[in-house]
Structure formats: structure tokens, C-alpha cells
Amino acid sequence: MSRTLYLVRHAESLSASGDQKDFERTLTNNGYMNATKMGHYLFEQNVRPNKFVSSDAIRARQTTLNMAEQMKSDTNKIVWEHELYEASVRTFLKVVNDLQVEWKVVVMVGHNPTISYLAEYITGEAIEDMPTSSVVQIDFDLESWAEVSEGNGNFIRQINSDQIEQNS
Image 1 (cartoon, rainbow, N blue to C red):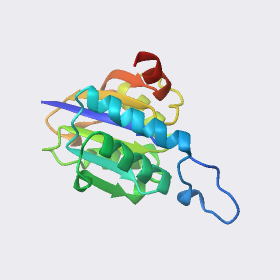
Image 2: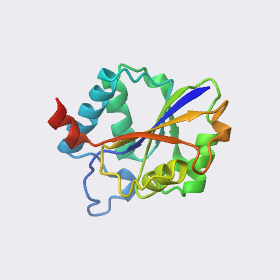
Image 3: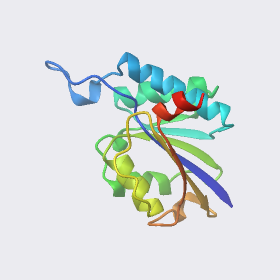
Image 4: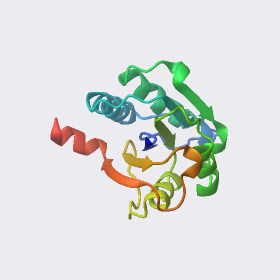
């Protein structure tokens, strides 16, 4: 049974300033533009997620909401997971393993370095550091998300927002 996971690193965000906590950092104007561009690109590529699962940090929320809007998805398809903020690969994998079996296409939005490490762990590919607003597409031939583990995902592609400009 085919499943597709899109791992997304949140868009570019402002540096923390003053008393602002890291969790509260917001997107830059460039970050908003790149999240918009990526969401539109994925929609044009016929990506229709059953669910978005995102860290609830402000920059991840803004990225997810912007992409979902561009992909013409209802916000009721978004699940906010606080545990994805500052998560380990093990924690992130547990969230993947707990996804509902009826969801065939899932977009997950998180933070580096964990999102990059997770992509490498699942696919066995050298992903290295995913740039902001980038996406790694991973396909699985599995009955359920609970079966996702080390090396059993098929790396399909990595899409960086700067590549979209060159291709459009």
C-alpha cells in the first residue's frame, strides 16, 4: 500500500531578539514568500495531503498555514504537535509511526537539524542540512505508518525553494 511523507523544514525566520523566546520567532518576508511558493508548487504538482502535522512553534505554524492555504487545504487537516519542537529523531519517528492508517499523504513541518536527520534515517540517503522552505518527498510501500523505520523509505526528491524559481 503506497504512502507518501513530505518532510518540510519551516521557512526562514527572524532571529530571536530581546526577551523573545526561540519558540516565538516569526517568519521573515522572504520566509512567507518561500512558504507560499513551495505550497503553490506542491499544489501544481498535484500533492493533496490528507493531513498536515506540524510543530506548534510560531515559525512552523506560519509555514504550515501558508502552505496549506496555497495547497487549498482546510485548516482542519492540520494537527499541531508540541513535541515536534526541539524533538529528537526518536520522538519525530514516534509521531510518524502514530499517524492514522487512513492518511496516505502527510506533510510534516519541523525544525533542523532533526527534520534532516529524520529524512536520512528513514531513507538511508545523505540529505545533510535541509535549507529553510525545503521539502523531502519519501514514498513507502507499507500497510501502515507504524511500519516506518530505518532505511525503509524510498527517497524520491528534495525540493528547495530556490529551485522552484529556476524551474518556473
